[in-house]
Length: 232
Length: 105
Image (cartoon, each protein chain N blue to C red):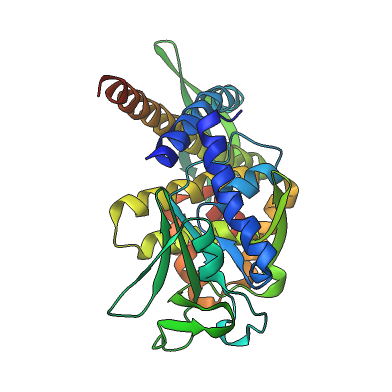
């Protein structure tokens, strides 16, 4: 059950993805952030147990910014949809804003984290580095919503990363939102055998450091997930 | 602001459904808490719960058995579902307040 206003927002969001697909840029991108929930919800038969809360930020991940070969003029594509480019003078990072929507391009922050902003010349954009975005190819999955398919992180992995990220957040509002999303997704996934298996698989894909951090968080915040991940 | 209001309305509808779903789930889960009694080298587990004004105690089994593990898991699940229900009710109250304020303003 979705209301008309929300349908309109989704249509606005999908128009961005559609334009990026037509330009060829979408093949280099992965949808991350709160808009993934829309695709997860559709994938799991519109379950009400998956939260619908999403922000105005449309986060698109460029997994390997320096390996992008496909040419596309992303700023021009977004400008044709009415988005305005805003650049940070400090870092050189660019975002695209139009009223309610903000399109941002992110990349995994690897190594010592010195390269915080990287220019992706073939797409004419800059990407900002953030931790816990280092998804391998088999950790991404195509999902459809409203007849549109895009690559998103596997929901089980998305859930575990949400737990880890919430603890590292400085903004308390975002922290609460991340935790609520992670707890509800975890509860939903644990209800099916496929989901339970997926959570164990996702846990096995984390680094030792991430596993340790996750267990410390869920011991208190989601004891059932802790039990599921630690029992033999 | 339209995204915000659209999402809020959608979330309000979802939360109403969630209340029903969690309510149904809660009915299937046992109430109470576990009490442990140590006798010799064994720990015996009892479920203590309220039945009207009375507090009842039911023997579950020896610590570590599958019955005890399963019950402990169900009690943890009940606690989690109660938490979700509480936060869904709070969110609904907040959303209703915002809707009222929007109508006035």
